[in-house]
Structure formats: C-alpha cells, structure tokens
Amino acid sequence: MKNVVLLGSTGSIGRSAAEVLERHPDRFKTFALVAHRQGRALCEQAARLKPRFCALTDESAWREVRGSFPAGVELLCGLDEVKEIIARPEVHVVLAGITGAAGLPTSLHAVECGKTLALANKESLVMAGEAMMRMAARRGVDILPVDSEHSAIFQSLKGGRREEVRRIILTASGGPFLHKSKDEIAAATPEQALKHPTWNMGAKITIDSATLFNKALEVIEARWLFGLPADRIDVVVHPQSIVHSMVEFVDASVIAQLGLPDMKVPIQYALSYPDRLEGLAPRLSFEEARTLTFQPPDLDRFPALRLGFEAARAGGTAGAVLNAANEVAVERFLRRDISFPRIPALVEEVLSRHRLVREPDLPAILDADRWAREEAARCSRS
Image 1 (cartoon, rainbow, N blue to C red):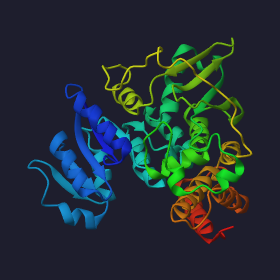
Image 2 (image 1 turned 30 degrees about the horizontal axis):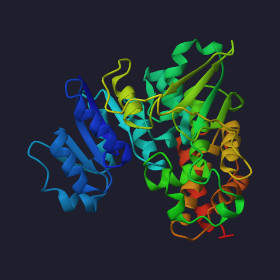
Image 3 (image 1 turned 90 degrees about the horizontal axis):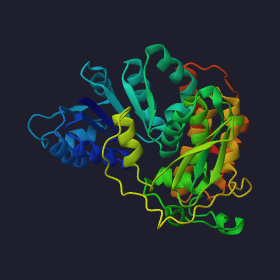
Image 4 (image 1 turned 30 degrees about the vertical axis):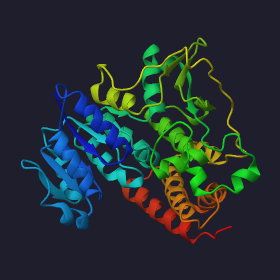
C-alpha cells in the first residue's frame, strides 16, 4: 500500500489520477489532496477518496469551504502546510500535477524529503532540471515521468542499457494547426487554438501544443531526465498520437511504447512502478488503428520547437526564462492582447535579452523566472 499525495488534484492530470487511485484502493491510499482555489471540486474529491488531509493554497478559497469537508478530513491552507504534508514520514509518493512554474517549489520539496516523485509538472525540470536530478541522485529518489512521451521513453529504455542508446525520439501530435498555412496560423484565434485534435487538456497546455512549445519544454525535460545532450533528442510529428515516443539503440533497433491517448496509463505506471496493474484505459485495436504516419516538424511554421532545442543546449537559466516568457505570452494571447505567431516571437525576444547563468542555484533560477515575466509583460504587441 502506497500513501499518495496528489498535487493539483482538481486539474486535468489530477482528475485522471483520482480515477486511478479510486480504481486500486488495495494498492494506493490517498493521503492528501492539494488544489489552488477550486474548493468545491476538492470537497467532492475528498468525499470520494477520503484522504487524511486536503489543502488549498488560496486563502479566500479555503475560507469559503472550510466548514464543508467530510468528517475525518483535515483542511489546511497555504504552501507551508502543503510542504509539511509532503514531509510526513507516512508519505511514499508525491504526484506533481500542478501546471506551470507554480509547481516547482513542491516538486523540489518532495525530492528534498526523499519521496518518490511522479512528475507531471514538466516545468520543474525545464527550470531546475540539473539541480533537481543532482538532488534526486544524492537522496536516492526516483523521479518517474507522467508525461506520456517521457513515460514512453522511460518504458522503452528497458529494452537496453543506457550506454547502448543512440537517441530518443519524442512524438508530437502537431496540434490543431498542423495542416494550416502560415497565413492561417497568423490569423488563429484562441478558440481555434484550444481545439486539440486528440487530447483533452487544460488551456495552457493546449495552447502550448498548438505552438509546439509543449514539445519544446519536453525536449528540455528529456535532456535532464534522461541525461542526454540535445543533439541526441529528436522530435517527429505523429498526428494519430498512438506511438507516444521511441528509443533508438546503437544497433539500429527502435523500441516504442504505443497505446490510445489516455493520461491514466502513464499516471498509473508512475504510481505503480515497478509493477503494472489492470488499467482503466481502452485497449488499442490494430483493426481500427491501421495507419500510423510520421513527418518532420516544420520549424518555419512552428519556431517554438527551435527555441526549445536552443534552450536545452544552453542549459543554465535558459529553460526558466523560456518557460516564464511563454507562460506570460500564452496569457496575453488568451486575453487577445497578442496574435498567435507573436507567442514564440515574444519568447525569442526575451531569450535574446537574457544574460545566461550557467550553473544557477534556486534563487538565481527564481530571479531569472521573475525577470523573464517582467520582460514578457513589457514586450510590445507586435
């Protein structure tokens, strides 16, 4: 029985993780659920999963629902309380499902406390990958990927030794604008960008998929998680989202992980690792999935991916700056303050002005994040 703390429980990853926890009460105990401000949704989850603790990091949301939680569930408030929950000796696994840079403090804290980290918050490794992986090695902590692509690579690596790996290949759906011209992409609205062809995700990650910034972040994440330089990481567009990623070995063998697009699969594998459990996801039918296609990404129409590779090569604070500038740019696009193509252009502007710190400590990373947000907010609309 593993005691699990679920961070970001009311988001898209958190809701899928809650289904997995409900499906296997003999293997997992929900020790704590943590959300930011969706108090009512958290209360409903608490009634189903019966955790020992719940926490909201937004005080006004906590005040609104503090008398509504089921008996036996202690409702706490604030980041410090969340960190105390994570540090408790009863906790075995922390699933980091918080979106964006906001997830970094709790991800780092879980590793510092020696907890197994099931990581869906890719931004933690994008911002502080080198420091986090070094800390995990020192503490003997497993960081298990929840992103479908990184989970696929993690599973495919079981087919050989690390020194036998030639490269890893991340797959990308291509998003809603895969077959659109530059003119059509230039005129894209938030409503169009939010219509992902295969995945049902939150607004930020859906926009990132449309720009391919999601894949740019995943390149940086993979660089640190698997300890490979950027020139041994490739991206291929695979619109069917059946092959979740691949590993090529030195003998030219390529091993891939396949399945229908359903986040419950990588979530459950990270929670149950090294075991595999009966799953909730539908099975892949090769009678229906008869055609799998692959093509190289178009870096002219989708320049965000080029920026991701550049940041992965640069290391240091480049990932934190890229991530922060992109978060601000996406917010501005959703407010209709900037156009869709302006998102990567704005990020590139901010990166060009950044003075790289090559081996940053956490304060330097946070300084870079703060600076990039201020710069991205100041950038012109065109």
